[in-house]
Image 1 (cartoon, helix red, strand yellow):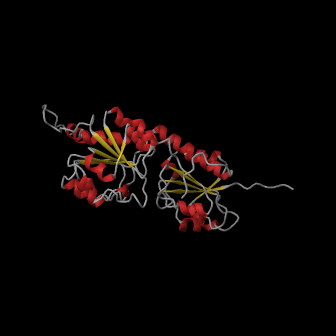
Image 2: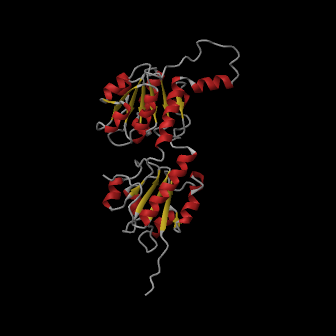
Image 3: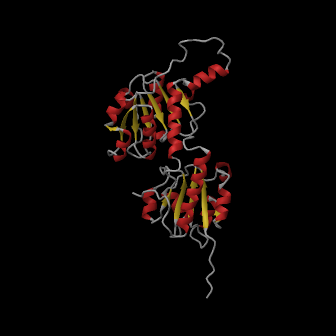
Length: 333
């Protein structure tokens, strides 16, 4: 009796429409997938083969493709699906409850991008505080031809108060860096965190954090509870001299309320790595303001972090295909 072992099939989903170019996202992935000796199929191919003996065994996701009940019904209506492996830590684009109901583990890439993302938060914070981008533009345009003593006066960072919303892995690293700047560290999260003691961080209500912080740094996941938690009422509580830094997810902030707060100088400025909608349309009013520093969702974008994210996401995929525990499994509801 010879058992012919069929090649396992991985459906690769790239971007919101599922069909973006994998190679453009990370050129190392094609080779990494090849090394697993799997057959790679597209969303369209997976749909055609659903329910046949050529159905897919795994989903490999990057650039936030929506993994919804609808998608799972389309590409994996049977019981063939063994794993959903995501390149990235955030899983707000994946219906975790639906995956749990189907007994499908979800892999993600925490830890390997924590330092990179915390560094990006600090890059934005310091750029805002010291008008780095304005200074660059002014100098690059040839305007620095005479020394001006009071030009682009910034805000001190050292010994000020930072308010961190969400003290998870990334929030903790933002706090660790803040301790080096001798800052008073406030944080808000669903529950007080034992790790806060390492940085001398004080737990407080969101209202209190907003009213006291000179820099509000968002590090929380996007959930029903955090959606638009930074809204008109939140901006009204913030200091006029405060800066908002968002390295979390765009929808944690009410974009219209943010534009209004920046336009009316209700807050001093914002450093944003994420947006809602994302990407923003080219005509969006946020893009025309001069008290923002904007980055194109580059939080984890370092050479080292990308390499580790690729490896861990593929390791999760391989483990799932073999029915082994995932090296980094997203907590299911």
